[in-house]
Amino acid sequence: MPAHIHPTAAIDPGAVVGDGARIWHFCHVMGSAAIGANCNIGQNVYIDANVTIGKGCKIQNNVSIYKGVTLEDEVFCGPSMVFTNVFNPRAAIRRMDEARPTLVKRGASLGANSTIVCGVTIGSFAFVGAGAVVTKDVPDHALVYGNPAKVQGWVCACGEKLSGDLRCVECVAAYESCETGLRAIAGQA
Image (cartoon, rainbow, N blue to C red; front, side, top):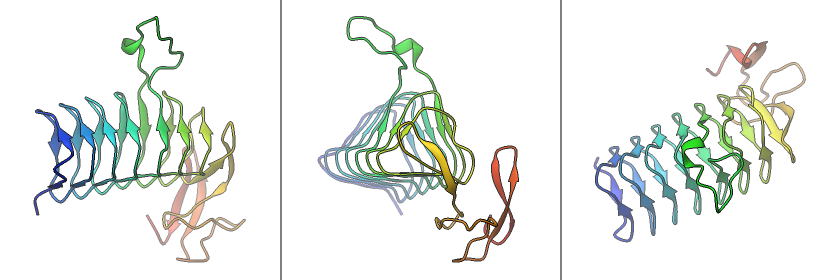
């Protein structure tokens, strides 16, 4: 199925938009950006040059994804969440060549109005709470919130908070600690 692009969206030459993607009102996708298949890009989203968005991502309204950001498959970006791209910006000093890369791994969810400071990695299936300010790497399956965001618990790949024994009461998946956070040992991948 071909991509659906609303007539008010601007897709610059050189941008790649995957099959089945939906790009809604007043979006701007810069040339050399790549959007995977079956993504849903909400109203008023800006996607900068050299940004890579994996397949099946959902980007809610009013999100700007700047140069240096990579979203793996099935990432959720909540309404009006923010990615930064320069660590110490100044209007009078050009620092775009100092942009720090940000990686959001497969299945992660970034809550509404959260801020992701450039240079961090958000682990697979991690969950960043609404309004959180992420200043450090987030482990796989971690639930983080606050300012600065801190690990407050763990979440299943299905999105439910895990019990103290690292089991999901919703889908019965089980997890264990590993060097990147948690990994599934039964149930969900």
